[in-house]
Amino acid sequence: MSVTHIVGVDPGLVHTGVVRMVFDPQHHEIIVEHEAVIGPNANSVVAWARESKIKPYWQAPTCFIEGYRPRSNFNTDKRMTQAVSNMHQALPGSKVLDNTGVKKVVRRQLMQLLGVWTFGTPTHHDDLRSAARIALLGMLKDEQTNQLLADVVRDHLAGDTWVVK
Image (cartoon, rainbow, N blue to C red):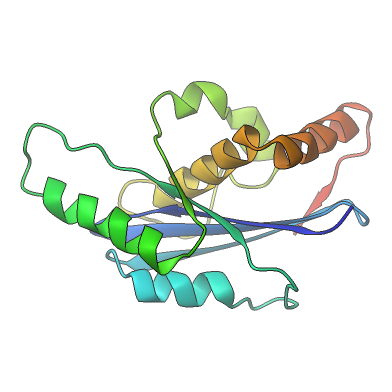
């Protein structure tokens, strides 16, 4: 099984959370990186998603972006809707996902197992955790990456927990 490279994005007006998870089944490793981009800067998100401080990846990441639903005609609705649209256009092949009910599907225990529950970088609205959560939701919705997550959990339950770096 090959390496799987996933990026989750939580666009925001103050911070945009971006989280990379690289799953290496051969070595039972998960590499996690994160970035808190200032504002809804699509160019910075794209640059970060394509670059890495760790070994280069031979495949482009699969990107999942948290969608935004306008709420009560707040002043920020138009800017947030535009931010999501800009991220989606800047990341070809990315998928925008509705986050309704995501906390009931992507649970704390799974996020802790994968090393994406807490981050050392503070953000305005826990944007890094939200970015990781939307990435995992996207993985759960895809047959192959859902199987990969199932393998990680199954291995953990059998006492062979993957190493998170």
